[in-house]
Length: 459
Length: 162
Image (cartoon, rainbow over all chains, first blue to last red):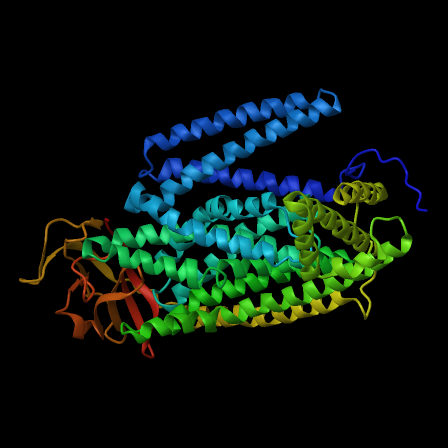
C-alpha cells in the first residue's frame, strides 16, 4: 500500500519562488513602462483622440492607484488575508490595464469609420475568432488548457501586443519613409519592422505564461496552443483595424462594404489559422520545446529559434506579397487562396508537424506513466483504466457511457476524474524528466484527490 | 534528465533547428533584397529642389495657391521641381507614391536637360476611383543607375485627409 504523507495544501507551491518569477516581474515591469510610454505618446502626439479618452484613462489611473494601495497593504497581513488582498489588487490592476489599452486601441485603430462600423466589424470577427480559439484548445487532446489562460493569451494578443507595437512600428516607418527609396527596399524594411516588433509583442505573452504558469505549460503542444491563441487575439484586433480603415477609404467610392468584407474573409476566414496564429504558434513551439530541454543553453537557443522562425514567416509574407499580384478578374479569387497557401502554408505545415510530434510524444509518455502509476497500486489509476485514459476517443466513449447510465452529473464527475488522472500522469512525466519544481506532496495530494473523485464518480 | 539519443524531445529540438536554418535563409534573403535596393554606395551628394506641393488644375495643367502639406481627397495636387543645378551626366526620375506604395504619377527617367520642361508632376487618381486614396503620399526625386533607383535626392511627404 502506498504511504501518503499529510499534505500542507491542495496544490502546494515551491517554498521559495523560483528565479523565473523575478524574470517575469522584470518583463512585466518593462511592458508596463512601454505601455505607459505609449499612452503618453498617444496623449501628446495623436490629437485625433478625443478628450473623453483621457477620462477613461483617469478611471484606469484610479483603479491602478487603489490596486497598488491594496497590494501594499497586503504585505502586512496574515497569509490568508494577504492572499485575498493580492487577488483583489490583481483584479483591479488587470482591469485598469485592460480598460486603458482597450480604449486607446479602439480610438487608435477603429476611429476611421466611426463607432457604428467599428462595432459591426468587431461583431463580425467574434464568431470566427471564438471558433479559432475553440479549435486551438481542442487540439490539445490529452490535457486541455484552462479557458481562463487561453482567453488571457488571446486578450494579450488583441489589446496588449497591439499597444506594444504601435509606436515602435510608427517610428520605424517614419524614419524609413523619410530616408529610403520607395519600392522593394522600403517594403523589406517595413516587413522587418512588422515581423520583429509584432512577434516580440505577441511572443512576450507566451514567455510570461511559460515563466509564471509552469503548471499549465507542459510541452510543445501547450506552447503551440497558447501561441496560436495570442495570434488569434492579435488577428482579431488587426482585422477590425483593416476592415474599418478600408471601409473609410472606399465608402466614398461606393465600395466600402465590399472592401471591408474582403478583409474579413482574408483575415477571419482564409487567414484565421494561416497568419498570426501560425506565426505566434511558432514562438510558442520554441518555448514549449525549451520547457523540456535540460540545459539552459539549449533552452535559450530553442526560444530564440522559435522567435526567429516566426519573424521570418511574418517577414516573408509582408515583404514578398507583391511578388504574387492578384488579377482584377474572377481568377483573382483563386489567386488569393493560392497566394496564402504558397506563402503561409509551409509555415502552418511546419507548426502541424511540431504539433503532431508533440502529441505523439505526449501520448506515449502519458501511457507509460499511467502504466507505472497503475503498477504502484495506490488506486489512483487502475490497470484496466490505462488503455482507456491513454486514448482520447476511449475516454470520450467512457464518458458517454456514464452519461447514458447516470446522466450529466455522472458525465461531469467522470470527466473530472479522468482529467485528474491525466494531470497525475503529466506530473509524473515531468518529475521523471527532472523538469518540475513543485514538491512531491503535490503529486501525493493529486492521488488523494483522485481517490475522492473516484468515490464520487462511483455514486 | 539528459537529452539522450532516444529522447523524443531531441527530435523536436532538431526539427526546430532545421526550421531555424530555413528562417535564417529567409532573413538573409530579406537583407540581401534590402541591400540590393538600398546599396551602401557612396552618394555623390546631389540634392534636388522640390519647390513645393500645390493645388493642380488638370484642365490648364497649372498649379495654384501656396504650398501645402495636406489635401482633401477630392483635391488635385502636384509637385513642382527645380531641375537646375543637377548634372546632365546623371539620370533622374520624379515619382509619386500613394499610401499603398503604388506609383500614381511620375516624370522621367531622364537627364535634367531632358526634364527641363517637366517641372510639374501631378499625383493622379488611380484608375477606377473618383478620389485620391487617403493617407501619406511620398513624392521622391530618385537618381537612376543601371535602370533602377539607387538614391532619393529630394523628398516631400503630404497627407490626403480622409
